[in-house]
Image (cartoon, rainbow, N blue to C red; front, side, top):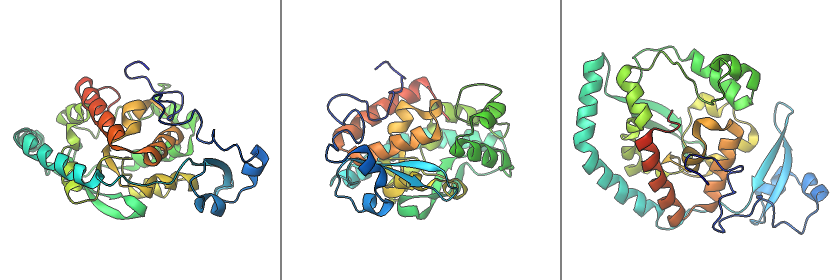
Amino acid sequence: MGEGEAPAEPWAVGEGEAPAEPWADDNAKSPQERQSMTKEDLERGSGMATEQSAIDADGSAAQIYQVRQIKVYRSKRVIDFIIASIGLLLAAPFAAIIALLIRVSGPGPAVFKQTRIGKDGKEFSFFKFRSMRVGCDDSSHRQYMKLFIEGDEEGLDKFQSGRKIYKLTGDDRVTAIGKFLRRTSLDELPQLLNVLRGEMSIVGPRPHIPYEVNMYKEWHRRRLKGNPGITGWWQIHGRSRVTFDESVKMDIWYLEHQSVILDIRIMMRTITKAIVGRGAC
């Protein structure tokens, strides 16, 4: 796989980590039998790879994927704590300079606090270096996220003037220093505090804003079964180049296959991505 290229499917990663399709080892059930399974059967499942069609509240069909039980490896919290502690110490001088530049660039605090949704749908205070002007209207972001989560390609094309990219571009709310911070992902440094507090992990699905979670399809909520992260499988393999549904599949795949080795790979790739600024939001 070339640098920066996303796999055709999030589980197509090689090295024997996952089957070519998440239900590939379910030889005991025919497609008809899988189709007839209820949502409760899937959620109650023993970890056997299955696929199910479910009906969302809006009446649309959705695929629910369950490859294996979501289980955090034992040392994850310890590793998170150690990395976050060391990271905060090493980043302190840079963080002080960034905070000063933000304060000089305009009114408002250097660190931005926002409510996000964490594991099992619990709210927490999420920290970032402020990259936007204070008191901005978020209606354009709400409208964009609605189109993005619903997969409305026509509506997204109008937002992006035909550009095939899945992020809100040309956002005039972002400051000059904010553009640099976002491109290099330095705006994420304060989230090391969230990791120390146990609200986030170094690696995991990105935490969403409450109004974004309220727009989820039913199967999207499986990504809330683990702690959110500063970086993750989606960030290094998709980010602004994949649809929302594909990003959720990547998050779910990670939660079902997380390990020490996989987390190290993701963290190393994140560093290179931050250096080149590829696909930054």
